[in-house]
Each structure stands twice: as structure tokens, then as C-alpha cells.
Image (cartoon, rainbow, N blue to C red; front, side, top):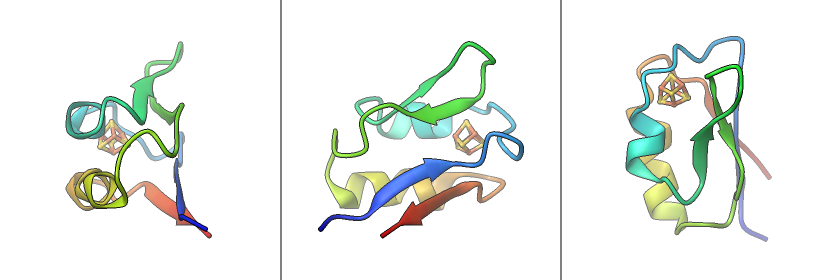
Length: 63
Ligand code: SF4
């Protein structure tokens, strides 16, 4: 099964890079922190770009 990404909302600084990298997967919620709304909305490779691009490293994988 594919890995599922998730965002630690307490650590997110709302920079928007993940939303820019994979808008099919990440969006800003009402509290203006990033959240995963469709974990399979993009390829794992594309999601990995967002994970690696997060400046505070607050996007994690769940098996
Ligand atoms: S890249 Fe990281 S810090 Fe930036 S909005 Fe996404 S989860 Fe938050």
C-alpha cells in the first residue's frame, strides 16, 4: 500500500511550499496551516518533493 503523508499542524509555519508543490494533495485549512486533503492525489514522487521541500520538516509519512 502507498504511504500516506500527513502534516504536523503545530509545526507548520504556513509557508505554502507544499501547497505549491502538490496542490492535489495539500491545502490550507481554516486555521491557515497546511493539511493533507487527498493523500493519493499525486504520485509519491511529487509528494516526496513537498516533504523534502518543507523548511521545517513537518510533513511525515504514515505507512
Ligand atoms: S511546506 Fe511545511 S511549513 Fe510550509 S505550508 Fe507545507 S507543511 Fe507547512
